Image 1 (tube, rainbow, N blue to C red):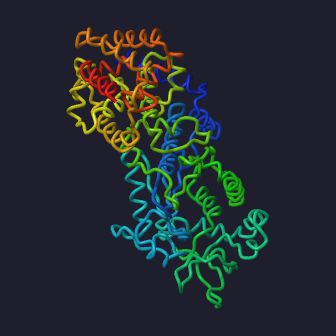
Image 2 (image 1 turned 180 degrees about the vertical axis):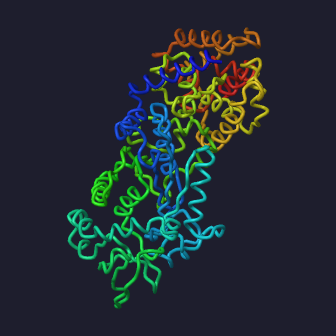
Image 3 (image 1 turned 30 degrees about the horizontal axis):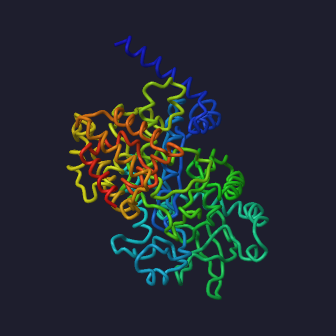
Length: 532
């Protein structure tokens, strides 16, 4: 037992030493936190990671992305430090509704509540206490599905319960200094009405954007004008909220946030909130600015536009790991995020996962799957690629999962859901993706004269092969016909195979496809092409 413990400690030490040198971005971020507390844990006893969410629209993958990436940094920090950690997912659900989202029902009803806090607006879906409660529930469902270790926090609950009372009074005590930070960043007309504090109208319930006078900071008392009348009102008890840059800083200070990342479009906000945090007497958290996801047209993803993907959409066609893989890679590079990316993401994930066991430790720490699985990478493999599955179900038309497993037996002798449990759900996703995106685009054209002769040769060669011929043997035949079949370039032959047999301009390694689909079935495809 002592020897096992010694070996275990040695492995931990080796991992920690490698992580301290790794160039993988989560470890680079983790090292910033290590420098933040060179003498050990902070006074609160743990390092706090935060992610923020504005529930003014339905959550999408861009929202989920922040929690996933922050969790990866958290795990990286835990690999290089013994300081305990916590993660809080904070919902700014006291924010006033500025615009009715395009992708929700009962939009006309919602338009009657513009300007009111999101937790005081009815749920247009009719299933939760408020619009914010509905969107918060969706976010939590997303996070729970992935097994994230987090604490959910509601702005409304924190403002109402008094958790922010001391911090709110502190904002009033430093009101003028906060104004000095914010006013130079605003246009002249905005400066005239700006206040760090947004009172909630006792008459209309709207979050007001009006000048505010501090009456008694220690009591939390302010004065403002509402519908032509002077009102004196406490900012405590959820009767006011802060402008979001001030609110962000107040939250950092009140909770002791040590790390929070944000999109590149919020760099200026991070700077201003950092200045306000210092005014309030605290050090801003460490952070990371990532590039934004774009839709398939190159436009920024927006909750109100509804042009982003939902996690359900991705998981209809791709695995959870493929989504995490896509989110992990190149966070400082703007990337499109649409359903057409899924097949490549699935196959890339499995390729990196297959490479992982044989890699030296340094390379493992830079492998995305290390961060997706927090170092505990499964060892199972797939016998076929997702791309090959898509080609198979694309020519099978209305296939069932059982039929696909039957075809797989042509290619993998021991193919079964029990033998390859990771493949079984991928078959369902391949069937769905092929049905919704591949089948409508397929068009099998007739071959020209050169292609016809080559296809006839291929059919004759396949007729001589045994039913269990290997993919490599078939590929050699395909390759030889392409070299001697009168094509200007070998790729012209492969393109002809894809377009005449599969109906697509791109396709798989044909030897693998024919072995998977079966020689007899592949000969039928050739016969159909020759008959056009």
